[in-house]
Length: 296
Image 1 (tube, rainbow, N blue to C red):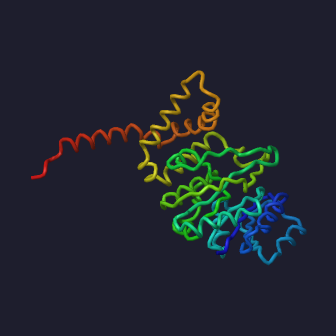
Image 2: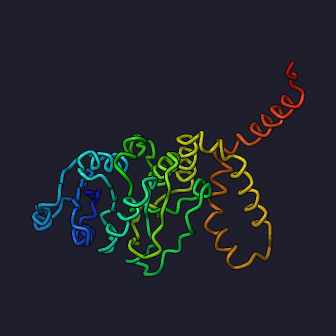
Image 3: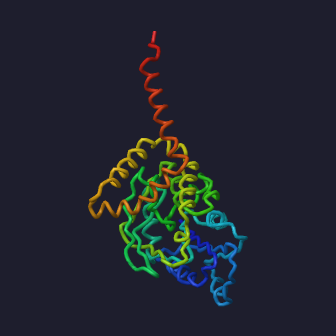
């Protein structure tokens, strides 16, 4: 089974050699690398361009279109049955593809395989991620972009949503795969390394952009959110109760710090405003069922 490692790049040419080396040095040999220049305003060096002339590397340029469109166009050109996106400033361990591939071969229902991770660059430490659990992932994304999935599943869900213009396209895409009723597997080993830099895209997000992105995800996956509406409301009620606690435990404080902003995003979004209407509809449905006509 061939694996295509997708690397979109916008001006991060100084980091690309590390990402490319990690992709080409996989212990699983049947890998290709597809690099797309997403309309960079800085030209790569001649030396770097020469290094891209590799028998297992495809390189092409497009007009600046954003991460979702860049990934989609790279995947279109990919010949692998499995896809692994890798940002140009990150890197992967040599055994990542080999270890992830086993799960796809052994379990046909697997849709996503990811692993443990570490930060490097401005911050060097373990990236603490909770175990995968549905429906928790509706509220917070803890599957990073560099996870493996099947190209056929990418086609089934229509690729990455280009309406995620401010980011969070990964969260949106993973929910699309999850909605196919596919299994998600986490390898309990650090095989992905996420670079922390001052100009990181996530560091530039403003509060209103975060609210807009979360609301867009809810719109893109309306049925999934509606089906799990009671859980969402219950979870936020729990968190709201914790926020009112003056002396939470340290682990609770950490969780609240991570999710406090998400609560604000949800409460400010149009989806949250559906809460009262949803509760009214439920009450009406219960009344209708209670007083409905009996079978003759």
